[in-house]
Amino acid sequence: MLLPILLALAGGLTAAAGVAFLTAWAYLTLSIAVGQGPASLLIGLGLTILAAVLLVFARNRFAKRALTDPPVSQPAAPATGETGLASQIAFTAAFVLARSLGEGRRD
Image (cartoon, rainbow, N blue to C red; front, top):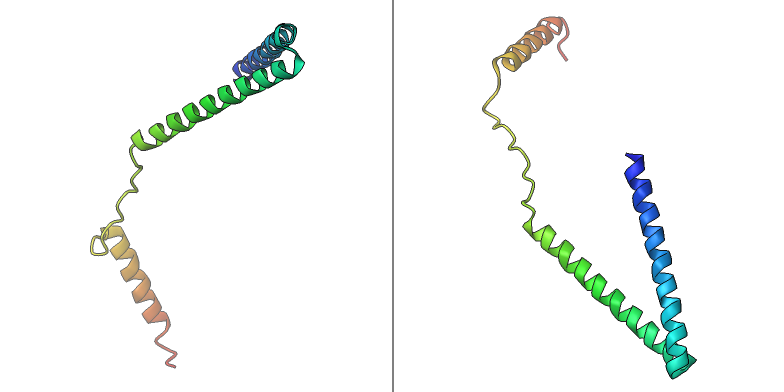
C-alpha cells in the first residue's frame, strides 16, 4: 500500500520539475523574442488560464459525481408493535421480579 503512494508522489514531483523547466525554457525563449516584461506577462496569463480551466473541470467533475451517486438510505426502524418473543419474555420476567421484590414496600 505504501509503494503506490510513494510512486505517485515521485511521479508528481518529477512532473512538477518538468513543468518548471518548461516554464523556464518558455520564459528564456520569449524574453529573447519580445522582452522580459511581456514574456513574464504571457507566461503568467497562460498559467493562470490553465489553472482556471483545471479548477472548472475539477469542479464540474465532482459536481456530476455527487449528483449521480445514489443516496444512501438508512434502514427502517422496526415498528413499535413488532417485538420479538424473547424481548416480551424478558420484559415480563423483569416486571414480575420487580413486583415481587417491591411488595413489602409501598410508598
